[in-house]
Every structure is written in C-alpha cells, then in structure tokens.
Length: 484
Image (cartoon, rainbow, N blue to C red; front, top):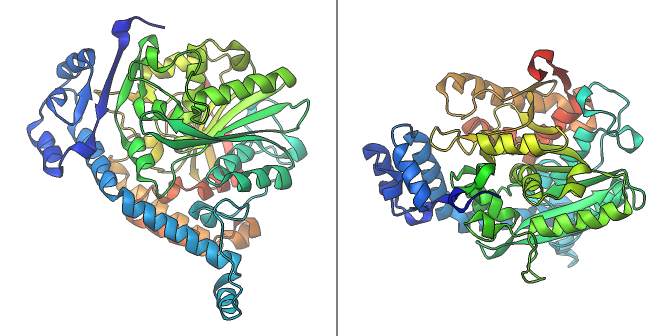
C-alpha cells in the first residue's frame, strides 16, 4: 500500500480567501504553500515549492475564483433550484397552466411530493425520456465491447446513459423506471455519508437485468446536480491526495466515495466500522456486489455515471484494486462514463489501467462539454484522463480517441468553433423531432438550457439530453491507428 512518506495532500480552501487575495496570487505568483487558504502536508509543501516556475497560474487562480464564487452563491442557487423544481412539478401534476387554474378554482389543487415516483428534477424536465431505445442496428456498437447486449436489442451505451440520467431523480422515480419501464430488477438505492462534509451528499443505485441468474449488474452514481454549488466546486477543485504507488487522486471525489482521513492509508481501511445510518458509498456498494455475485456467479458488472457520477464510477475500481477485491474485479465488464471530469494524475491513470483485469474503460464526451476538461491539466498537478474516449463532435458522428480536443477548454484557438457548435446545436434542436421522430422532440426547458450555451459554450453540451441523443443517433468509427 506504499510507504508512509508516500502519503500527502494539497487542499484548496477558496471559501477562506478573498477575491483580491486570489487575484494577488496571479499578479505576484507567490508560492502556493505560503497561502493561508491552501493546506498542504510537509511533503507536498516541498514539492509545490520546487514547481513554482512550472505552475500555470491562470488555471490555479481560475479554479480558486470559481470555487469562491460558487461558495458565495451556494444558498441562493439552492433556493432557486428548489423553487424552480417545485414550480415545474406543480404545473405538471396539475395539467399545465390551464389545469392549474382549474384546480385552483375548484379547490382541488394537487401539491407535488418530492419523494413520489412522478416528481422530476429540473434535468428531468430538460429531458423527460424514460424508456430505453430499442434498435436492431449495430452501427452504434463498438467492436471491442464484445457481445455485451441486453434484452430486446437494447444498446449498452444507451442503457448506461439512461441510468446515469435517471440517477438525478429520487428513489421512487428510479425504482419505477427500472421495474416498470425497463423491465429489470431494482436492487437498491443508497444515500451515502460524506465524512468531511458531514452530509449525505453521495447517491447511487444498483440494478440487474434479472432478479435471478442475472447476466448483468449495473452500478450507477448520481452526477453534478445543476443547483448544488458544492458539486460544481468539487468539479473545478484542484485539491488532491497522494495515494502511494497509486499516484495522486482528486480529493473531493475520494471524499464523496467514502474517504475517512487525509492520510489515504487511514482513509481507506479494508472495512468500515462507522455508524450504520451513515453508510459510505464505496463500502455499501462493494458489500452489495459481493452478495449479488454469490447468487449470480456469471454476472458481469458495469459501473457508470454522468458528470460527478462518472468521476465516482471511474475511481470506484481503484479502491477495489487497493483492497485486492479480486472477486468483484474479475466479474467486471468495465467502466462507462459520460461527461466525466479528470480524477487523478498520470500515475493514477496508469495504475488503474494496468491493474484492471478488463480493459473496457470508456468515457463519452460530447463536443466542447466543459466538465471533461476539468480539473485542469496543470503542469504542477497533472490531472489526466484514462481509458478510451468516445468523442462526439456532433449528434451523428462519433470516434474513439485517447483524448478530446481542447483539453483545458480555454485555448483561444477553439473560441470560434465552440460558439459555432453552440449555435449549431440550438438550431438543430428545433427540427430534430421532425427529422428523427417524437423521441427527439425537445421541451421549452431544453431550449432554454441551450440558450445558456450561447453565453458559456460547453455548458449546454454537458446536459444529459445531448449524451442520450448521441448514443442513439451517432455512428461510431474506430481508428485502427488509435487502438494500437
């Protein structure tokens, strides 16, 4: 597990820094270890001091500024999101605007319940699709995925993306989707504790294709919630924890998965001895998988998620490797993520790829989605992706590459292309329902979300709708040169 000296950390605390303090860091290029709002271990302090000249100060300051702004707006953003979702559900459950008026007049107003199966998140109104896409076409299958089909010719890419999209909803909604719409077996929903944040901030669920003799088990992590500032702060954060021979891993993602201490050896004990009403995501999912495999010995496990959920899906196997959980690892089909941020440095990426029994690690990226391009690939921190990237440069064209273009998002040579993509997607969305069928008709909420992409290109591209469209419409090409 590595020597004690191989453990260390660097933690950004933008909430403790003023805007002027952060800007002065860029102007005067002070050593990061001298900043009161940056916490480091002794070993990491020395390393940072040696890398002052190679530090990309723009990206460091940008990360801190974004974190500070998000920290300042977290309460009003959360209130706005809660009010918006309640209003959307209020109109929906009462039959729209005129239905709402009728129910008010007749004193029969229905009040939405947040834990009911028909209550949707804001993302659920951006893309309300619930059924899986059935097709006999093989165009969207990657040859190297092998014969991993599900029932009724449903595509694995679509199943994982729909599961990742549904993960943003409540437990009742998720269970209804799996049992009544997908005709599969709901195993459980897990609301998990974050030791550092002192909240149940990580959600995940598990389902299988059949209740008995299952051939497939799917683990799904919930992603970045649009009105949760802490989720976004985690995405842009540069903080890391050193994990011995495993390299550096993103500290925020490790915390969300179940890390218990800033020293990784103490933070990842083999077994969790904490309170039962405060389950940690890694441990409860690991133990559930062990029980499932005892009953379904031939089942293959797929781990998936969108955005922050994709990050948790990517690092979950790394802790299985750390704990030598060979039974689960040998039963894994692989990882499939969507709009996933980077989760560690090059050493961490190499460690996971080398020690995974299977090499099917795919991350899907749509156009200039901003999230797969954070945390920034800074020379001082060196965050890197691992696995193969299925990159969609449009709804109808996908290709397998090692890394998507514009890896840090802010390269000025991509500005024109990013805005062109945002306008192109907005224009296409107006006609897609007519050209591709009612399954692709977009709502007013979806159109409004696309308008945000005209202000911040790449933001709208992160939405689940484009990822669902891509997995259903695109033809994927595999370059033999890339795969060598």
